[in-house]
Image (cartoon, rainbow, N blue to C red):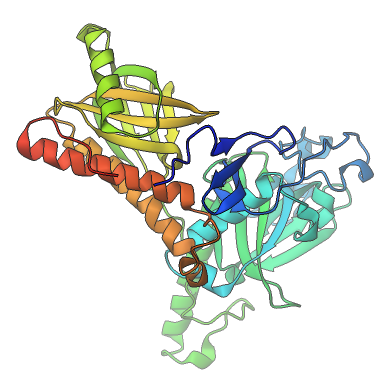
Length: 431
């Protein structure tokens, strides 16, 4: 067992870009990008600040600055001056570029993860993103217009069409999980036939683009169905409105993330010395419960999703007390009292927080939900690993941290099962 959380294994380097950490284990020294979970052998190049200015030349390679820009005066113009179709939808966006994808990345169960990885790749500064990414308009502002079954990218200054994509040919689209204003779609380049994932930063929530695309695809599918019925099932009469897509074409539909909600009492948070261990968990639970009174515990809604565990005040739905990405949840379990539940979160820089809750009638359902989210995260990491890497024991895999964290979570869940069965304190399983 390698303690990846030890001082010697987890080191900072002032020469590294923000978000990068230098890791050391028996495989050697490698570098971990905490926001995306990416690992690599090569030392990442530092991100140099990009000078700002009104000229296009100063923004030519400004991928390190991805915050939405101030709205241009042209956005205040009447939408009719941008497009002539009253049913067209217009969105102000900035192109972050594109990433080449493989056909196997779009397999069922993998496409969502692959697209989100592309969004993250272009949303964070990496080695030299200019070598692998193509930029329309050098990353400047533009309009994304959905019109006449086409997705058009239009220059806001001279109204020239920078790119045009038939909506029916879009394979997958999605909204960023880390930032609701990031949008991406995957389509095959008409000239090179390469699958490309195009990523944009929107001035408004990207969900509006995804919803509009879903509505358009639903309408196209209905038109296809009617055309097929009128043709008597003949595949020769499959075209309608000039689109060269088969009647049997399947269009992507937005996936809603399952969220389980639990009404619990939030006892509080206490810093802990280590990221794992039932002794650490029980010690934190006992300390917080004995040092407080029940009337001080806060009624909250504990929301457990595939990627995030969120604690929201019950009376003030907008106030988020705690938000923990599942990838940063290092340990969880039920305390000596089956009503108590806690998890440990890695907050970075060798700081670990233990959050404690009181559940009625017991903590079983809450713990099972958090366990399921952790196991789903673990399975996605396994699916994302190429078979060649699974057989290689020398190179540190991209999911090495998640895999070890998930193992710790599994131990905590096994302890939970024993607790609920035996109604007595459990001992941590051997490492």
